[in-house]
Image 1 (tube, rainbow, N blue to C red):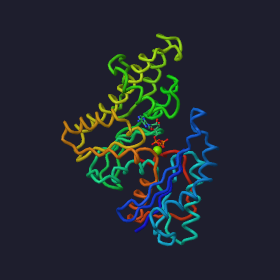
Image 2: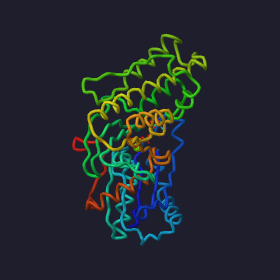
Image 3: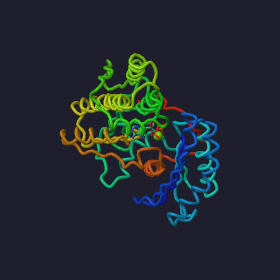
Image 4: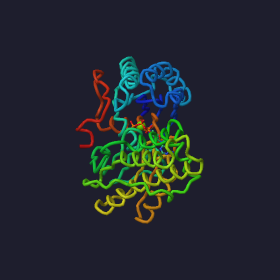
Length: 337
Ligand SMILES: Nc1ncnc2c1ncn2[C@@H]1O[C@H](COP(=O)(O)OP(=O)(O)OP(=O)(O)O)[C@@H](O)[C@H]1O
Ligand SMILES: [Mg+2]
């Protein structure tokens, strides 16, 4: 079965071809021009998706050596994401499905991230604990099968990636913040500043807003403004902030492992690219004798391989859709209720 996957929820246009279990292509075109605006500009993002989507599909087909009429299923991200950006990929996918008379499968982007560990040679084993840490979401999920997903907790305010982006902006490091903080943190002392980790009544929930504010207060109190922070102090702030985020994630994971019998842990989403987080979680998993699956960097950020994979599983479960399907900008109550 050849599955064409299309992803266009934010600032990456991506097209993948999954042939059975073999990933033949996973092309990602990143809209780097947003950096000069300090964040993604939705209208510019939609236009850029529109310009690149057809050439990218052609490139993916030629790289895979698969002809258009050999595609069996077309899967595209339906949400959550920027509505204009989603519309480009989803409408293209529906149009192609109609013209080729092939089944169309809408895919939840977060479920794409969730199962991205299955793109690796060593796959998660059910039931597994999933930690989804991305630009817009932070979720702790108990995953019993491809269709049985239970939400244990989520963020009550900022997502983990959002906190990285906002703190990087405060420190004048630019966008996207995650990789910049990681780089600065590698040169700093993570024990220098004891930034707080929120304790919530509902233990599995996350909160990163207080942490972000305490970094801001620290900068204002100690230096007045970010431009006056000496370089070594900036490295220490980045390292201490990153360490606080990791402590929060590790704490919830540890608790969940005590209360739920799982075979594996899978860390997914853009923030899963973070080296220190990957290493710390792998260490925790080792101590707890759990298998850990963290996708390679290519599959952490937005990519269509994860959409094609999730699409293939939904197709196998009979979850195709009519062409009237509309994109959705946010997760609604029925998602991971
Ligand atoms: N090395 C890193 N360390 C920490 N964060 C990182 C790293 N690399 C990327 N990120 C963060 O990952 C986020 C992007 O991840 P992703 O592309 O999955 O998010 P998104 O698609 O915008 O949001 P969502 O998937 O929730 O809709 C950004 O916030 C970015 O700063
Ligand atoms: Mg994403």
